[in-house]
Image 1 (cartoon, helix red, strand yellow):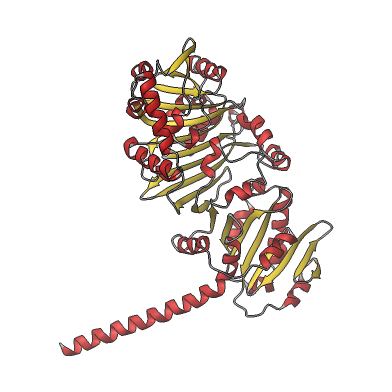
Image 2 (spheres, helix red, strand yellow; image 1 turned 180 degrees about the vertical axis):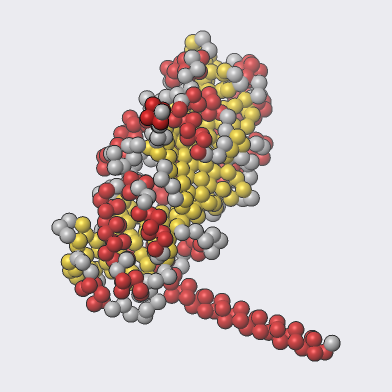
Length: 517
């Protein structure tokens, strides 16, 4: 018995020693390879990470969607870097087994720059390698200009054991001067990169994303885009290779509870049904599922108190109750069902829709609070009621026109928008009836807690106004996004975080039946 105890003790000590040696070596390796990650994660809200692996490059070479997203100039330059630098035999030797990350960050004059970063375990890089490149190399201080042929060029620098390449010298200068310091986003990436063994991943820092989008959009992130604004959240998503869609899936983690999106993290996902009421000319929508309105409402009130709004709301509700002899708390809080959405028509008109339990009863309760404008259309006498009960997406509906039809409350800032909705619904001219949307629905999950959708065809005029000229040109180009059906973004609450899916879908290839006969 004594021998057995001694043997167990020796085995335990042996395992402990090997574990210590393994993790101490792992930590030393990670310390050496963290530099590029720390630099990029502190500056780029989106970046793409992949292994320096032949299999990955072979798959990517048959994938056109990323080229369509990036545009011909950036995709050509990245292709040249891959063929002439990364695949260079001697250069590849010093970065063998290392991850490569491509970060996208805001540049000057409405540009989006990229920085490709990797590292080597060598303590010192032999700069004579640059002379072996099939390119013209010029040095200015710590930056090397690498020019391929007559036009395509990039800029290269070294930061410790990190190798940085960019399309813009200014962005590279900024990163080259950056100190190797840890940040929360880098820690999140390291934690999540160990969970899945995939060829490629995309990481998003939503807190800094608006800074990047500002260079792409002419508009602020309000209304239907508000879910991308003021969100202190990180996402770790796996890239799925496909010839007909750009698909990412993974998790989105909220870093604080003060955002509108955080109100939904404990709400269950639902089958999306409210889209069956949307007109066929719908350009985009944002869907929200609230399975427990009582809890959700309490969380909203907490946020309103933190934002110093709740006292004013209470005061207004008290005044409404006294003026109209109606208990405002017995209206939407009592008759809300489970789903709501805000959507925009291709004309640019914005509407909201709320699923309710008893439209006739709610309509009666709202009679004194509203005035008749036209048959089936009324207008609120008081302001901000929908915003008080449902938050940020309904803030723009200050004193809206509305209609109630088939247990759905529909609102808009113009009576003509309500009439368009009613005409479409009564004539069965609905988004759900279109082939494009049916195809999109087939490619996505039928359930979500929050979902964002953009219809490519119906969004042309809106995006012409909202995108900077360079990006709208790319959106309309044949070698850009012209032949794409839709963009979808779904979040499903899952134990305090969101299971996330992002989809950019190409148009369905229609088969000519006559050619098959």
